[in-house]
Image (cartoon, rainbow, N blue to C red; front, side, top):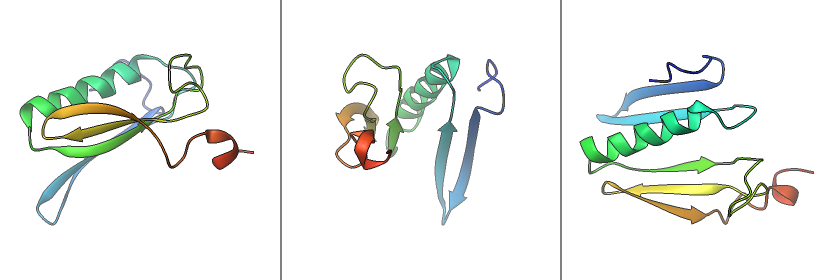
Length: 100
């Protein structure tokens, strides 16, 4: 997992909390590289192996031209082994909500 990238751009952990395991993945890369494909592969694998999994992943690509564009987050909602993509109502648009 994440073999193709430098270790300083990705931080991940799988930790038990009160008998439930939580996967946390954080990526901070200067440009879209292999990390994005690695994260998507892990999420899709979890959906297959653990169909009861649920969670939310926020993605921001400041070079994105496709919706939602470079000034917004895309949200991956995982529920019952399915992934749906949604626009973010909380942190988008990034300017002015989280940036000056």
